[in-house]
Length: 632
Image (cartoon, rainbow, N blue to C red; front, side, top):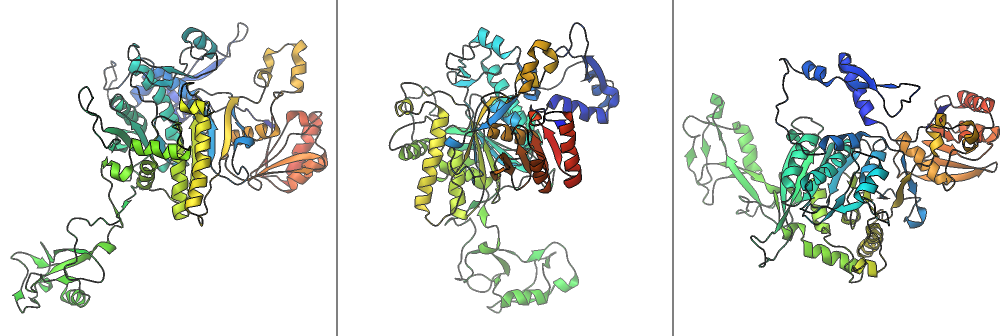
């Protein structure tokens, strides 16, 4: 019976396998220092990069000069993104809203590790990503990733974790690696984020002037220069700061990249149009009070044509007209008469002008092509965002620098979301993105789903949030979603939208270390094998840990029931059925198998001996031959 490994995939190994399938002569072996011992040498696959470079060139490759953007720690950040981890997401029902029915997720934890855990379940499924990462202003906190040594070693040397376990550090401009640390932090996360985007997906990244140039180069590498869409300028302020040293900064940047654009991939991202509202495009009017509304007109002649297109036209005033010299009418005489009868030809106010064909606004694009400048009167501003948040929290300023809902609504429209799209924000802060998604769903009846990821960063003791008993950013984000959902429902009493969310918290693996390295344990420690699951883990912890490994979304329907005194967990009506009880009787195994789930999982300790496991395999072969069965 197959055993679950319960750790994320080694992306480096996967990439090596892909290269090996194309260029087997570029694959070699090297010593695996982690797995080797003094008694036994273990080897692993590796890439001969010099050979690979030569395989990809028509010329002799010599030297290392090339155009590239690099910094101290870049290679280490790439390695870090590809490393597998032994972590899990533990469900927290008591902090969730509508656990059984909601399809929204709120995940607490370091987003680098969370993104690794989401790789299988959400690979290529996210339509829109929006992030507002920490800006590198010389005083702001950023995530401090361990790129060179173990977590404990790094923590001892750098003070990465304080006594309360905080995961961030203040990157001051006096730090010699001021830009490098920030670039390393964002690079590894964007590498993983790209994998989650669907083929027609798009990412928006808010940033200020300090790192926009570096971020643009990083995104060019990760998403491809050809998939750069625009550097949007958002007017975040509406009033001048007259005490500014030089210029009064009125804007932030929002970099926009697609996974694939339609010029490269026909299934790539297509931009969404903004609503017209009452705006009348230039060139449109209705001088003849046509019941079909505003229109514009185009000339009726073309550079080429046949003799049949050189007919005479008589205007309403009686003037005879032919096409201009060297040109032809653009349609046949019969078609022209049909257009006249349908009032689609304009001869000018006095009826004597050269004929022009009318094109009605109602028959062209229903929306407006977005501008590269998002003005505050259309997309909101910082002050509006603060007031929105304070209004939800009864006048308390619980969060510094939130983004306005109107900005996220605008970006969601530009992203061209469909009614069931998934939207991810892995620097979720006050959860404005979740608020905007719920608002959009309430207005148009959509079923879009959000995934919010946020490090449980401590609030400062002097802050209004801390005084109001919100001790972490996550507590603010979750409460904001609860309050926003209530407010949206009150304002839209007939709307049906998902105002709930499932809470998950990043934690170490559910399994004891012996699960991964039993060969390192001696005879006196074999009792540990009796239970390879940590004592504080519940069935629900184990169940959702299995979902991650099997690549199932975390937002699908879940139920449990008791059968012959055993608890049976069912996911999405049979995508996965699990039972983690001890000594599971054959009657329960048979009832599970008769339901023919796609997947089934049990505890290794649920069976007293090897013959019992073999019996389980035989039952499934007989009753559910297509079911994949694993144990933990």
